Image 1 (cartoon, rainbow over the protein chains, first blue to last red):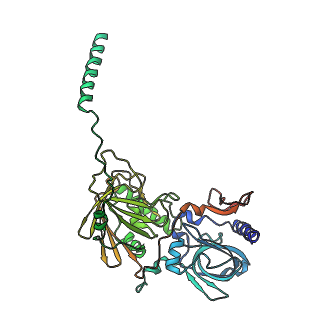
Image 2: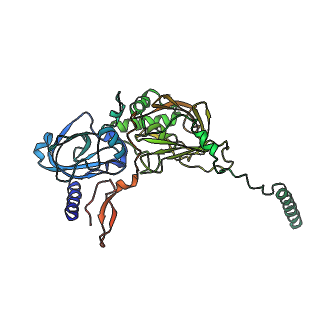
Image 3: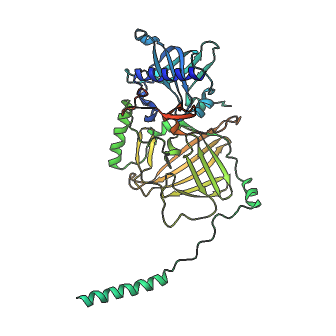
Length: 143
Length: 276
């Protein structure tokens, strides 16, 4: 189990490295994403990094809008674990490596980098949906 | 010439000795943190209920960044315009240092993370979720600000209750602490900043922080703004631990099989690099 996770981890780093992902969280601003654009990736979870200040999910799959690129590892950034639990019903174990998912996201403006801001995650097997919009907490009728 | 010098030295020494006697070390001040009494704890029950998880109203922060900008001085106004332009172009300026606190008052102004507020005898303490270093101690025991400034990220805060409103005065904030109105627009306060606040429940689950910020190095006049926090009515959440630096590491095992953290390796541009 540990060995598999370690291998997964190594693959994740290699995949992310190959994609040349920028360290998004260090910039602390959401404007490096093109929020006017939405893309969808279908693939398998490589890794969910449940850490502060930003949780990230890497997915190995095909982006519908970039189908010609073929499968690749994309890294989705989100807000903090605390915010995700309150705003999007997330859990640390929301997804596990290897699970099939569909992710809707806004891509990084730097189109060479395979990354984005996660908008919606759907777990294919169960249909469970997770969102990541921190402003969603402000809707009326909040529990 | 030499005797004159000696005479001068003698006079200086003599006056210094007199001054020393006049400025003899004062008695140490009375203990300023007495053990709390049962009455002190009972008095806390009379305070309004500020318990729970307070979330910032980010849509209001977004709106105010445009509708209620600070009275920047001319020089800083030009810098701010440049920063807005860079952010719009997708090249936001990094105004916060890694995991350093946003500091006061920028924590109140631009945080996207929750906080909790604790009442203990003589003190109101705010704890921010994004990292343990988001911490404000507001002394309500009647003490003054210190004679000798000891600048810190959150400054020295003293407060008192006017009914159910906490009135706070903060000085001695590090000059490096940014005055930020968004994550990518702000400048260091450059010193001599003073912040007063009126904090109160505007509604049962809405907290208002009314700020008046005097920042002579960057503002033309004091700036007033109110920031809004809200809590979930069902109170089903807790503040969770946040260690901001953890994002710079990944989990690994060492040669002895122990669980360790290893830094995520990055290039100077912040891209990940292959592990060795």
